[in-house]
Amino acid sequence: MTRTRTVATAAMLLLILSGLAQAARVGEPAPDFTGTDSHGRTVRLADLKGKFVVLEWHNDGCPYVGKHYGSGNMQRLQREWTGKGVVWLTVISSAEGQQGYITADQADAYFKEKNAAQTAVLLDPKGTIGRMYDARTTPHMFVIDPKGTLIYNGAVDDKPTTDRADVTGATNYVSAALTEAMSGKPVTRSTSRPYGCSVKYGTTS
Image 1 (tube, rainbow, N blue to C red):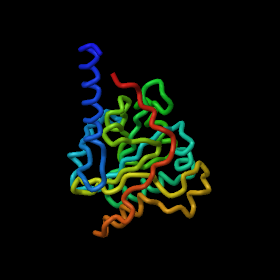
Image 2 (cartoon, helix red, strand yellow):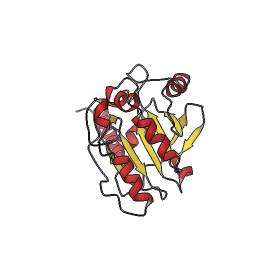
Image 3 (cartoon, helix red, strand yellow):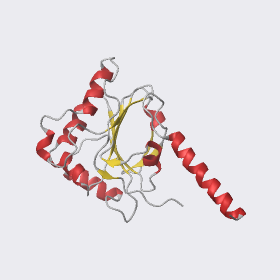
Image 4 (tube, helix red, strand yellow):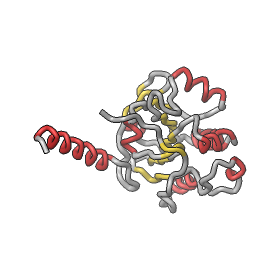
C-alpha cells in the first residue's frame, strides 16, 4: 500500500470514528447542530435549551411518510405538541438529485398544502444534521428534553407499514415519550427500530 493510500485510509477511518462518536445516543447530550430553515433563518439546538424538541426526518416521496401525512397523523402530532410548547423540527436530508430533495420555496408550498404545523423545516441537503444523528429512515424520530438530553430515538409508532388504516390503534412512541417526560416520569420506551425509506444522503467527499 502506498503512503498516499495509507494516509487516505487513515483519514477515512478517522472520519468514520468521528461520526460514530457524534451519533445520537439516548441518555446522552443530543448532538448540537446549526441548520437553516426554509425561510433562511438559522436554527441552533443550543438556543432551544429549556424546551422539548422533536426532530422528524422527512422525504415527500416516501410512502411511509405518505402514510402519516396522508392520514393527517403527523400534522395532528405537530399541532398537539407545539400547542404544548414543544419545538417540532422537520428535517429534510435528501441530497440534490435524490428522492425527497426540495428547495425552500417548494418546501413552504408543500407543507402549506399538507396543512402541517411544525415549528420549522430544516433543509439539510449535505446530510450534516442527518449524519450527526445517524438518521436512517423517513420518518425517523428523536425527542430531546429541556436539558438537551436525547430521551427518544426511533419510529413514530409500532405499525411499520404504509397502510394509513394502521395509524388508528397504533401505539405512538413519540407521544408516549413526551407525555411521560413532561410529567416528570422516565421514558418507558426510549428506543425502537425506525421504519420507512432510507434517508437519501449524497456521497461524501
